Length: 137
Picture 1: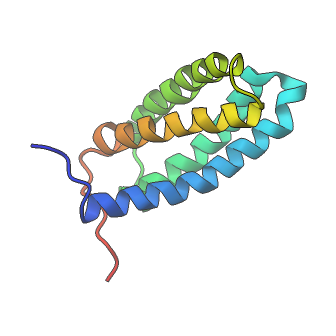
Picture 2: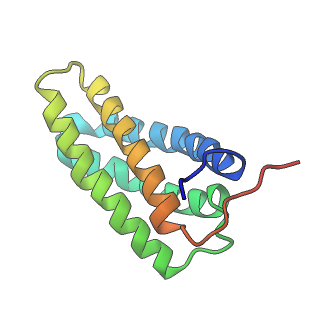
């Protein structure tokens, strides 16, 4: 059975994107504020951690309709998001930093890669047993 992006799945994707915009602004703002003083790795760790905290709560309850957040959700979220944000994103940043300028463009490209990977992880790993949200009438 192939996953569908119609109906409730489309609503979840749109909500995820909206939450992502807010989290991205938080992440990007903190990263730009801190990267000169902390370096790109530590600044990225701090900025993505802030975004992750917001993302867990809002995506769990609003985007994927969890009803309540459980320890299982928290552990799966931390494992999947941590892998993407603290392993994949820094690798993308370091790979692109040598060939793309300015650092803002590098960070935005890394965020784009994270967007795709995180949606798939949340929908099919973290909140897979939760019914997709239904569109408002």
